[in-house]
Length: 214
Image 1 (cartoon, one colour):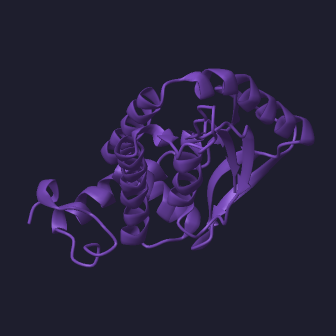
Image 2: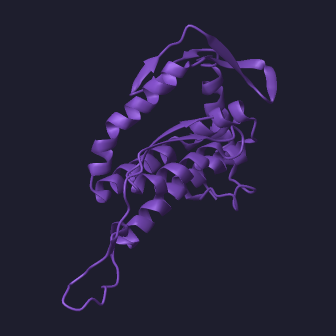
Image 3: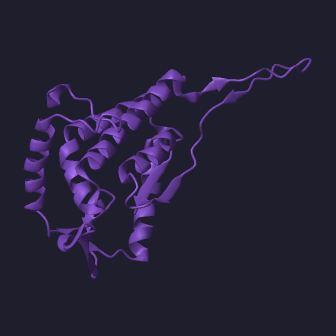
């Protein structure tokens, strides 16, 4: 079986083609060559840098510095929440079909970068390579499943039963409504990506904007 025909899942990860290991080693080398760089916090689509920093080290090799990261302040958190709130009207007002399109595009990008993201995940979280790759593949599948459910249920806008009121015509409609901004702090090492998809995709149909941290 070649890498191009291999479907990576948690069920098939125990017998991958040799080409997958070869490619992973190549990409892992590229990722390691970039270790130790400084990374800003992404707030409202832009990098922000703090006065205090911290080193992130690999849990599987604590001598290995993965990068230098920002120690965010309460103000940084407030800025991130404010950015999410400012984007809320656009996202919540977007037709659900367009949100489906955008999320499917995100899943396609994850497919294209599965090995690269998996290599980063293996170093930062300490997973073995197949667990890391399985996390990425499952996240993309979870996004697509959420899209499928949204289409199957036609946006979850459903006409309910009519009230039997004499002299009146009463209708009821069940529809997803916006809840606003959610802050989710998830475990850093237990399937860190698909936990985000688990919250962001179904929640996204409810017109939410999410800020995540770990």
